[in-house]
Each structure stands twice: as structure tokens, then as C-alpha cells.
Image 1 (cartoon, rainbow, N blue to C red):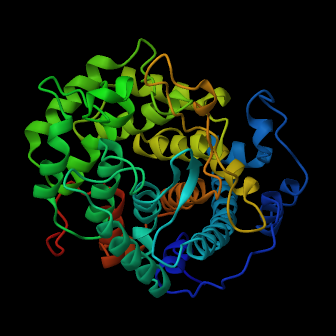
Image 2 (image 1 turned 180 degrees about the vertical axis):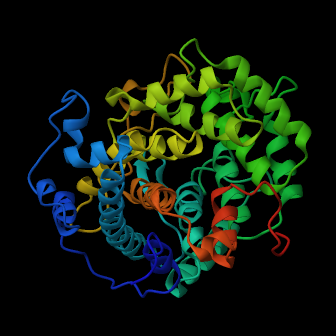
Amino acid sequence: MPAHGTSVIRMASERRYAGRPIRRRRVRAWFSFAGTAECATGLIATDSSKTAHFGIPAVFVSGLTGSDSAKGNRQHMILDALNRQTEMSIRAGIDFLLAGQDRDGFWRDYHLRTGPSEAWTTAWVGWCLTGFSTAPRVRDALRRAIAAIRSTRTPYGWGYNRNTGADADSTAWVVNFLSAAGYRCPELAEQLLLPFISPSGSVRTFLDPTVGTWCDPHLDVASMVGLALLNSGARCEFVSRIRAMLLDAAEIDGTWPSFWWASRTYATVWAGCFLQRTGGLDPRHTGQLVEFLSAESSRQTVMEETLGLLLLQELNAPEIIAARIAINLLEGQQASGGWNPSPMLLVPLRTATDDLKDVGPHGDVRALVSTALACFSLFRWSASTAHVTESRASGSAYDQRWSAATGMANQTPNGPNYG
């Protein structure tokens, strides 16, 4: 039996993916399997307005919040069983994503008036999968994705698809993906992204003034551009400029509004991740973000839940809050191995004459983006709940790769130059 918490990591690097949907099991069955009989049927009886919604057994809550050794032992067994369930879910999710890659290497998703996205969604899914690239099938899929993305580059970067102009958000996602895949691209990041950044640190999505509001500064794009500059190893002065702007732009409740998304959760999570990695947040702001993400209203879709789980890990929030979200995600996985689409993407009005029916919100109709984010956030959550093992304590090659893939290592990857 491997040491506690190593099964998910071993899955990513050693196991072969079965290539077929798994049979769904309710998460509560795994608690029963762990040897805690009272978990098999018991739902939370306390604080029913919050915890009961997630179907978490009462013993799990008491195990996480208690201090005596008996509760600690039960918590260990429950988390061990939950990690096994998480491993199965991630494996099925990756199978779903690999099957969803088109022959030319793109992961196409969404379906707007301009068609499906190509480079943007491919970079997003690819970034989520880079931590699993030791698996041959994943590595081959990422290689084909990078080749596909390179084929659609314009002199100004990348756009939603090959028929649209380059934009800061799509370009930033591609830079993040290339950096996570091991390419050194600080010059590329600066060349393509700096034109979108103002002296004050605000970031426009488009440069063309004829697109109306789409060329205004947008906070949900600024955070992603900041992360791309940070992860690619670009000069710190530009990262610092965006950081100062975001801190000044936070609303009174500590969150940030979204322009391109039907939820402030998107802008808030990426801003929180960027700020946490570039100097951190003060305790008061951290508490505001944890409170925001703890509210059920901030997590109405799979994407919102996965994003919330990511930021909670960044902020080292109380374990029980993240556990509730993780278990809800596990129970929401479909028989196909994927998760439900997230109707969140907006096509905001550029001018008063635009057609309101195009605004949305629009979902990732193939569920590739939602599923990729679910696999990514569940892996990080599962790894955080595991006890430190010898392989992780010694800084294994896998964990170094995972740190780079998640952007936790603020240094330029030691890979080939992009060009």
C-alpha cells in the first residue's frame, strides 16, 4: 500500500488511462469503505444551511475541526478514501479531455457567432494538463496542442480563433500554457502583451478602438496578463504595475468585477491568485476573499466551484471550506468522465447598436474547459490534503514539474526557447 496521499501523484505519472467512462459512485460510499460505518448514510446535521448541501458526513466535519486523536485517525481514513475517489475522478476526466481533442491538435469549445474557440480554449485545457505530462498520452496531446497553437499565431498574438483579432486574454493564456510546458518565453510575453498595458497598469482586451467597450481596461483580463508575465519570467516592473492597479481596483468587499464573465468569481479568483504570488494579501483582504468564496452564491457553476477551490488553496483557507467544494465537484462528475458546461462567458455590447441576444451567458458546450479546471483544481486540493511523503519532501522531479505547471515557482522554466 503506498504512503498516504501518493496515489493521485502516482496516477499522473505511472498509470495508463483506461480510455473509457468510469461507473459513478456516490462519494458517501467511499467514506463507508474507509471503515467509518456512520458515514454511510449520515448527512451533516449541523449548520444545514451550508454543509448539508454538500452531502458531507458529519463525522468528516468533526474530524476536520476536532483535536483529539480519535478524530484525527478517522480524518486520516476519510481523507485517504476521498483521495482514492479523487484519483478515479481525475483519471476519468483526463480520458474525457484526451478524447475531446480534435485531430489537428485543438481543443475547440464554446460556439459563438464567430464559431468555436481554438487557441484560447486549447491553451486553457493544455495549461491544466501540463502537470500530467509524464503520462505518454497526455504528453503527446500537449505536443499536438502546441503545434496547433503555433500555427494560428498572428504578428500581434492570438485570438479567440483564427478568424478574430489578437486579444490580450487569449495571448496571455497561450503564454501561460507555453511557460507551463517548459518553454522560455519572456521576450515573447513582453513583445505581445506590453502593448495592451497602460502606464497605470490597466489592461485592455483589444487594441482596436473601433470595437468600442472591448478595448476598454478590463480587470478580469489584467490578472491573466499579470500571471502570464510572471510565469514567463518577464521583467518585474510590468508585473508590479499590474499588481498596484489591481490592489487599488478592489471593491469594498475585497472582490473584483468581471467584464467578460457573468460572475465576479472569475475576476476575483485570478486577481487573488496573482496578488498572492506577487507579494501576498493582507489578512483582512484574505479574510474577505475566503468569506466570499464560502458563500454558495459565488459558486453556481462548475467553473466557479473549481476556481474557488484554486484560490482557497492559494490562501491556505480552512480545510473544511475547500473540502465542501471538492466533494460537491466529485459528486457532480458525469458518467462520461466530464463535468457539466459552465454558462458564464459573455459577449458584452460593444456599442448601443449591438444585438442583445449575443450577450449570453454562453457555456463551454463540449465541457472541455470546465472539465480541465475540475481535474486541475481537484489534483491540487487532493495533494494539499495528503500528508507529506518522502517523495514530496525530497523535491521529486514530478513535484518540480507540478510547481512549474501551476505557476507556484516564480522562475523561468529550464526548457527550450520559444520561437
